Amino acid sequence: LWQVHPFYCFVNATVRHSISRLFNVDGNGHCGFRLAAVSIGLEEGSWPDIWRDMLNRWIFMLSTRTNLHLDISDLIPFDQLQSNLNYFRSPAQTTQYWMNFPRHGDLLANAFQKPVIHISNLIIATFLPLSHGPTTNPPIFIVYIKGKYQFNAFQFEGSIYPAPNISPHWFKWKSEDAKEWENFIQLNHDEWDRRFPQDPTVVAAHPLYLMLS
Image 1 (tube, one colour):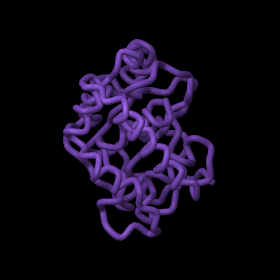
Image 2 (cartoon, one colour):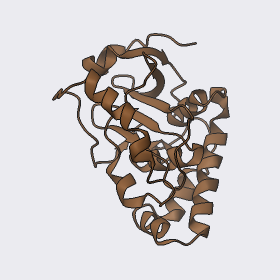
Image 3 (cartoon, helix red, strand yellow):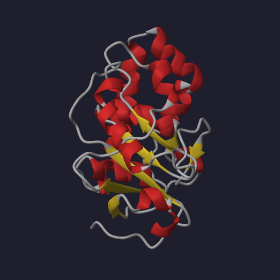
Image 4 (cartoon, one colour):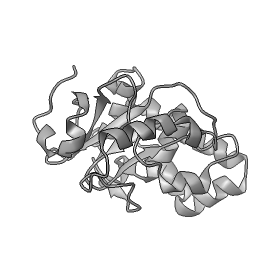
């Protein structure tokens, strides 16, 4: 199932040389959620479970009524997020139901208590859980294939995966339980700096939202 994608050449060349495998999921408007399913060991057809887990975690976070989660709600209105994550028709008819970064990055990491490594021409970032402390769960790796206009799962080569800069939102929203992630993932960030030293073509986390199929 893992294969070289026909549009693989559009991935940043420096990062591309460190990627060992790609998984080409179905681009039906739910590709981001499909690859998340693949990355945690499920069939890509289990993508509705990814949506449900993200939504249920978000509802639980809101039920705690902490200032942290209320701050997140100010940026991501609950009604909008609930509508986005409660749509199970396939293919998705409009872009509002597509996976959206950085918006979904923090929520995806938090739902599955593992880092999310996102690679695209606009956003290269690590998203971390907001309300859980460090775990040894392997990351969800997401790469955006320009030209194909969809997300795909991937794996880095080597025993230590490289982790780019942490999403700025994490520093604003992290709970006390989650704050140890920064030190926990430092080894992986050092590995990123070792593989991609001061490469101007490998951009840091970008604050703009990127909506992709």
